[in-house]
Amino acid sequence: MDVLDHQRQLLDRARQVYRDTPISDETVRAYLATPRHRFVRRYREWTSPYWQDVSESHLDEHLATLYADNAIILFGDDNDHIQSTISQPSFVLRMLDLLQLQPGHTVLEIGAGSGWNAALIGQIVGLTGRVYSLEIVPEMAERASASIAELGITNVHVIAADGSNGYAASAPYDRIVFTAGAHDLARPFYDQIKPGGLLLMVVKSHGDGDTLFLLEHVGDHFESRDAISCGFVSMTGKHQLDHLASAALEPLRERTAMAAGFRLHVYPADRHLATTGDQWIVRRQESQFLWSP
Image 1 (cartoon, helix red, strand yellow):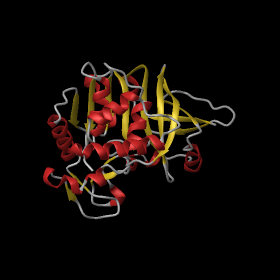
Image 2 (cartoon, one colour):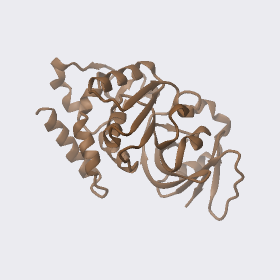
Image 3 (tube, one colour):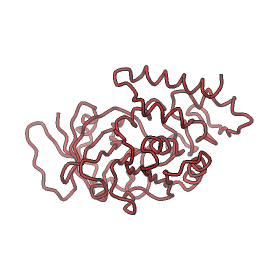
Image 4 (tube, rainbow, N blue to C red):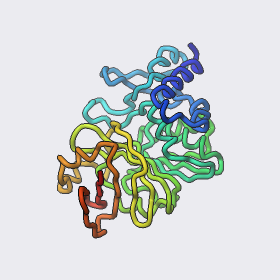
């Protein structure tokens, strides 16, 4: 099988997984124009401690792995503290559709990883759009930038930086997407997204499992529009979990809230909120999460 055969086989798999929410034509075109293997130079599988180097001369040996519908480790020797992965491809395509990207959009990504997701977004927003992707691991930022440059992509910019507080230099954004799990939403994100803009955020729980929430910026807060159960590596940097221990309130109820059927509103921490009925609030340092059945 050649690369295109592997690409199409993976696309068929993704279409089966999300047959109830068909992958859009725009996302399919971006996927076929942005080969996943061009963004992986070194990887290891979750079941192995051994790293694999990908070269053009030995590419055939890696294609089956690189085009399987699985996440792959890109940085981190300890499976309990993985810093970077390239996410499960079918889920990546679903995330792209959730963002409802349009030509000309300006997009901020928190967590560049391999650069593949940013490149896919760049294809959809087109040359009149811009993508700014922040990556806290310098080696990963360098690799992602190199991969993007090799493909001649000019509207995607990878920046080696802690994305915990966003990137004010190119704000406001039409879309913001997190590719790592967070326990809090930093205050700057409220100001860096346009009214009505969409923010795709992975909310990590204290138990097992995370939830991907599609949030719309409404007035001074965000409201959930969709949600999917998932699993992502945790954010590192200023707002990583070990800096938030004092804010970990109501863990049992929060685990319950991670079910994708719950509604979520996210407000700045200084906003006065009152609950009604079955609602409850989980307070963090910079945001508070209002959950509703």
